[in-house]
Length: 211
Image 1: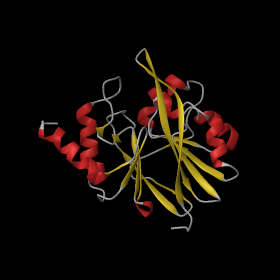
Image 2: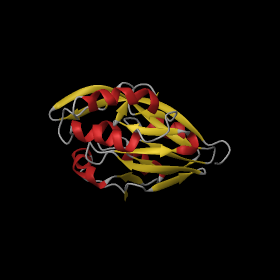
Image 3: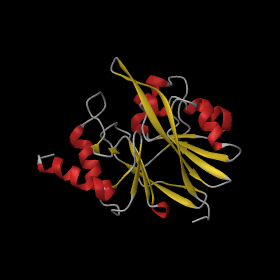
Image 4: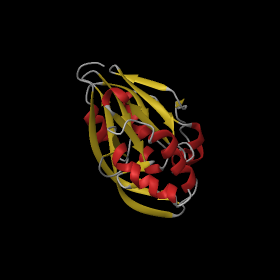
């Protein structure tokens, strides 16, 4: 791992809209890299603020954990300013097109794909449930998981709206996330961080109910 590789955190505010409703939300934007190059995970709401946080470093990719509008609304503007490609799992293209019908992502994320920045490997884990193309990014060198809206402090992400399914998200967390080391820090799409070990009992409660 490159010395100085680190995780930076920015909170941006805006709205989430789906199925005819709109809600005010605060989103976590994660920047991973060093003094020379970074990736942005979930370009939410405010391209100017994210660009300022990136500064004069090379932005190698804008990675979308899923395509709900609050996680991707600033992605094209940030890409336009920096030249960085936007990466999204193709199963979330129907959601993407609701927000950006005229601008497609630049690349497709795939389960098991490895993105490298500043010597740090980020492995793509396809974790459907909150959205069909939802992914998490696992960085073992940083003992970090970037979970988007798949896993929060307190349990699974919401599944009450279109394109989501509760048994699917529980299965994704059980099979793809709870197998990670317990001390892995979970950097979520909204709210505070947690760890895999902290969340394991919450998931077990759902599994005990038959999911």
